[in-house]
View (cartoon, rainbow, N blue to C red):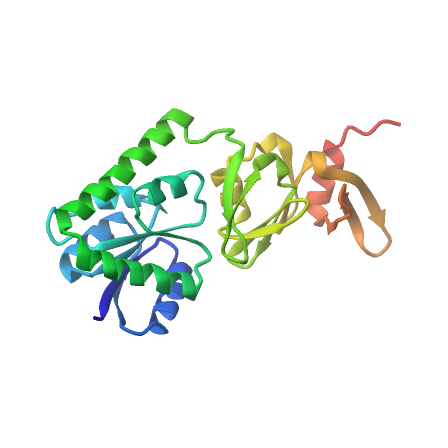
Length: 264
């Protein structure tokens, strides 16, 4: 059975990546894409896909807003895609709704589509929409209770082997940019996520006063800095307590030096 898939994401590069991955999967037809909530709702009605790969956070709303507009009959299978899962993983798993953390890997997407194929064959539309709305209720309740998770210390991140790992916000020493992704660095590991440094800092709710930008591609936790040195021919170097050596951009270096409470 060929599964007709619609992709929904407000990032053009993310949509293109999904299109390329879907092209490699057998028995899958990519029928179209949407870059926002309103367009997604219209495309679902027009194209009647079997499965929707649905981003959670978009410029004109959330994937939950799209789900609320789905009809009671003929609802497609939904696979959520997200860069920052926070506590959402628990809600999805409690109701057996599938999700994929970005960056998306072909093996993970294949498995999710296979599961959706099986669920579509076994469940009726009313049951599916009821399960998805239960997820929405749980997530919105969680956001309300936690104040959108402000200052919550716990983050669940997917490592390179695919396993979910719990880290603490306080353990993040550095965030570096890698093309369309950012890498979160702790003392013992690093984690690749989609987005920019600015978006990561906002989405992870990292206090601005605790971090300092030393380069357009590097954000450091102030308490992780051991020393700042001038190096002949190499400009200003920032040394973290774990020994990591980070070069500071010229403009950022000036701001950094001015912000240090130097004595003597």
